Length: 210
Image (cartoon, rainbow, N blue to C red; front, side, top):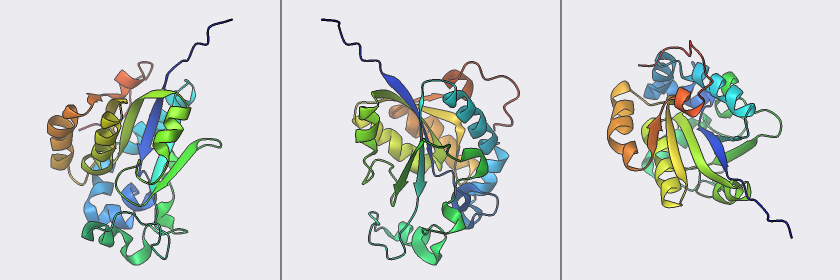
């Protein structure tokens, strides 16, 4: 009987790269500073490059967004901070704020995960989906570095995944918050790597990175 060989995969997991969070006119991004910081880092340009390379490889591509139902029934995070995110409908179903930024838009057949909290793993079935695809290593990017990226890295590390945070694919509400997460917090739970580390065939220029 022939031996069955199980081949493990990587997944590129891009989180909360949506108009309301980091788009140039996003309600949440403009108020928090995330839109400005993402622009200063050339974040969305880097995301477009990463997606191009992921799609031409065997990496599973996962897009995560935060989106609230209008009645709030499916909302899992009930903290005061999330009251602010849910208020005003900026991230409600059907609003412009939940749409992915053009550079981060999913292609047909790519996995889209919708959450109502910080972590992409809570209430979404993401862990089961990754394991069904034999994923063992995650490449993480998103906004904000010290929120969704850090939360995902902690959860994934505790769940047995090898975790790489792609620094070029992250932005926060300020450079100070981004740098603290990248230099002080995230190395405890993950490797912090560059876009070129993740995809060595990336060529210059990939845009500004502060």
